[in-house]
Length: 333
Image (cartoon, rainbow, N blue to C red; front, side):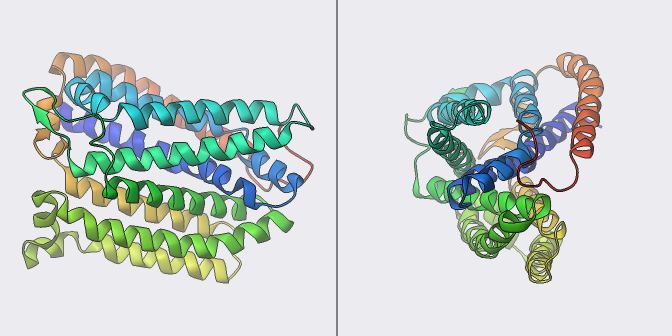
């Protein structure tokens, strides 16, 4: 198989792993002000405290892989998205500091609660804006970015920013349903109903809007009946996961709502892949245009063959060690 395709899959996998793993702890931060008592917020933070920094390993892997294997794409995307990406990184640092300092103070706890919320909200919103700006296309002339400073700021990118915030909040609420009990569990379940409806509405709006961002997107979904039949399984499965999400919430299940929400994210990610491939930057830059020489890809693949399994092993081990419910008054400090 072509090494470029292998690397495109590996980077896509790293990005998806980051979205689903860091998504639920960003979502927990987005819900932070709405959890009531500070003891409830303690419990919510303790549910993600042992694993949140490991989740962000995938962001480093995705960004580093893009720089090393698809340097042209990195050189074009970064100037186009400097503002939202820098804002996202600063927000992630801000919330990381809040993680460590919140448990060290009583009088100033409210400040770190606000910091955790603002950092989580900003990071999620900027990720959504960056996604929307990439989907709508980046102006390229020759081998360089040819657009303006604020091309990333459009109604579509703002909508994708809101969609990611609502989706992450859904992941956060279903995570708390799975990982907590008592008051936090009940509050998270109530929010999960509304956030599930909001996420599905956002998916519907973005999905209806996206085909009109690029002619290729429209042709891949609606150009002809045979073409539509090859991709129709995506919305069908998405509808099944949506039904599973609501049914599991109504039935009082603890784990299934979270995995049903992950299923929604997976299918949205697959839909993006259908739109993009073989492009890495719509409308004209393909993964083959942006790829590093084959010798570089081979060298890097040797390292990835060792590194990625190790990351998967220690990530799985961390989740296994900290499995089960987090009870009020107990957890990481």
